[in-house]
Structure formats: structure tokens, C-alpha cells
Image 1 (cartoon, helix red, strand yellow):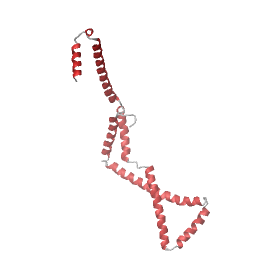
Image 2: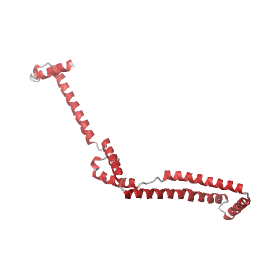
Image 3: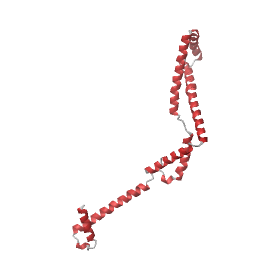
Image 4: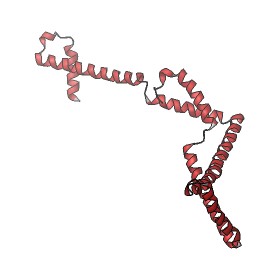
Length: 198
């Protein structure tokens, strides 16, 4: 700190002195110090300007998601959208349940025996009739066990397809759709302030 003060005092006194009267070594020292300070100031200005002019800065992304959250909070209070959300959710669950517990188990129940019979309906009927006859002639306990086994197989298969269907076709909320439409308009209004891909 004493050295800096001493250099500053000498530089101040040398400002009013003829540069030719100063020693050559000291004159070059003052020149190097001035250039270093000037380059440091220039770097600071460039960093500040570059951060402000960079369109991919983090505040732009944060502003996008903050605006989206605010819009979602506002539209959740609209009764019409709430009714649309409940209806869409009910239809989605009903459709997935019908596909998983109705279509796929029934198709598999007919498809697998048909494949085993080499796609010959006569062989299929000939194989199924003895099984049905044995089921009809069995005592009630055996019939109950057979029915429970079939129900468990049907539910497990349907539940498997239900989870698989939920993963492949997730629910599309009306709130998210409205937010996407709103944010596309918001991006157009703030195009210069947003990154290319949020």
C-alpha cells in the first residue's frame, strides 16, 4: 500500500514536470502502469456490456418461466377452464381404462389361442370345446378357482397396459395448452429479449 501511494504521489508530481526531465526507467514505469489501468477498465466495460447484450442470459429464461407461472395461476381461477380440465381428465382416464382393460386383454385372449392353432378356426374350436365342457362339469369350487384365476390374469394384464399407456400418452391439460398459446404470443412480443430456444 505504501508503494502504491508513493507511485501515485510521484505520478502526480510528474504530471507537472517535463517528461524529458524524468529518468527513462521511471518514465516507462509510469507509462506501463497507465496502460495496465486503462486495459483493466476496458475489460470491465466489455464484460458488463457483453453480459447486458447477450440474448441468452439467464434472466431471460427466468422471465419466461415466471411469466408462464403467473399466467397459469391466473387461469386456474377461471370456472370454465376448471370445468374443461375435469371433463378432459375424466375422458382421458376412461379412454385409457377401456383400452387397457377392454381391448388389449380381449384381443390377447383370442389372438394367442388363434396363433397356437395355426390360425385355423376349426382347430381352435376343437381345442376350446373340451376345456369349456370340463369347466361346466366341474364342481363349484373348481369353477370358482378358475374364474378367480381368469379375473386376476385379466386385471394384471389390464393394469400393465394401463401403466404403459399412461407413460406413452400422458395427459394434456387444458391449462398447459392455454399457457402454450399465451407464451407463444409473449415470445413474439419479447422476441429481442428472449433466447432462440427457451
